[in-house]
Length: 153
Image (cartoon, rainbow, N blue to C red; front, side, top):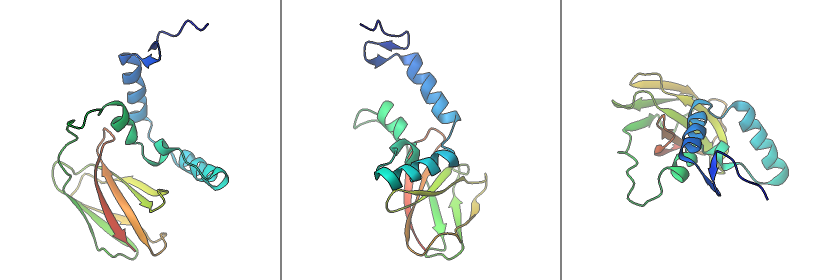
């Protein structure tokens, strides 16, 4: 019979534990090594770690439990040119100058991640992408998805 841990109350995480783990999550973003490992596991087992592909799920699962929870206004962001060849430009409107973005294919595989550069326009090299359809997802520092746009290459 296991007596438990100071970090839990029965089967539930205590608030301080949840806050500590969430702070760790925010300050230790998914690395290229974790993405590569997730892709390798997918090739063998045909399943993925959703928290590597979508770190924003952490906030949605642990901190937004009601339908009425406010997630924020839609981010004012755009991509051009679209369709694109070798580069895209991401435009943002204050206060969203510094936002994270990921580019994924339609299977959910993350191909690129980055952050806009505290300016109205950020240029991103996509020359390595094959022709096709992609999703560009923008999210805030707290990990919440704010907007997803389609990209054609």
